[in-house]
Length: 475
Image (cartoon, rainbow, N blue to C red; front, side, top):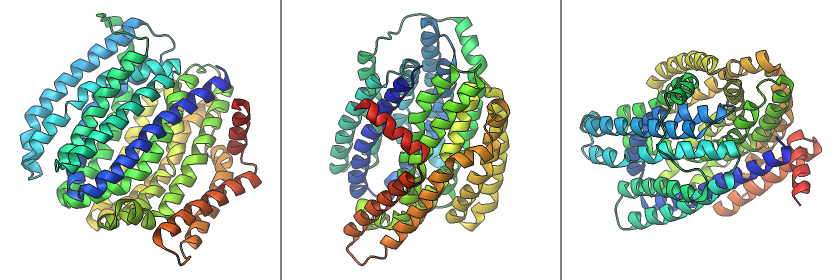
């Protein structure tokens, strides 16, 4: 596969992610100024159950379709019908369990909210197969168009409902409109069409690989959801709302960048399963590019969190500052974790992936048990520690199978880390300038970006040089 084609696909994926998320970012800012932390706390609780259900519905089959060397129409149709069946099962379960969940959290209104938001499961099952198809074709142009249109229309609808006083419902309706509209538009744009085909052989093949991915994804989702469950139960829904806002913006950046790179690298690396040297080269490129953007973005967001919250969300969200500051540091290490996980998936070692996830989650649950008694801030500090502890665990398979270990990966990332660290210091110094809040935020961003880009150029950062070369080719 040509490097230029990969770069073009990545560019479309970046446009899709940051175009749609850029729209959502603006929408969320407007909604945050209308709604209150309690509203977001309720939605965060609902999201736990939707996310856990989606693990069973989406993760295994979608990844199997992308990873498989050759796919057929029967594979895609079988995956979709199976996913829709699982979605129906989980909708029934959540519908029946919603009164008990509402009672557990002492929120009677939670029951009807969950029953309506659970309709997301059906859109998610369909979209996961569509996503696998465009990923294999590297046809992210259609996916970009569908997502941008859906994001804009659903965002406008969400604001309308919020202004009209719908509260939590405005957030629920926004998600439903976005997901279902994206499915319809994408179905119109791509050539793949659903047929009444169901193959037991296809199901067996997809399931043999996918169940291990599903298992590891379930473990990850349970762990990620554990924080919302604990905060919502032990503390307050207001604190959960603040934690959710503090997490939203660093997660917005890392999720979109990581998913952008992963969506392109998984199918590319999967086609190089028998070429260890080639896979190492591709992985090195993807890792350095991902870290080149994510690392400074997270350090920068951590540095400007106080001014950012006040200017963007308003004073009522000021208590979210320490959460954003610390969670940004947690997510700064994600490129290392996610790229090495993609390597395992591409090699077809979903069994090894599952085993390592179990080891990591035992460590992570232990950390939660230790830190929960000391408060939410202590729990986040625990996440920072685990982010570093998990690096050698995730890197080990890459070292074993393609000869790309911790020392070499950190060496490749060293210029990015140096430039990011200096940038962080420059932003903190800029915060001392006695000017208005908005001007100070702008100065911090401009100075930080200037220092990072300038130092990266002086250090001849490989990722930056590659991006400049690709830009020249496009022009």
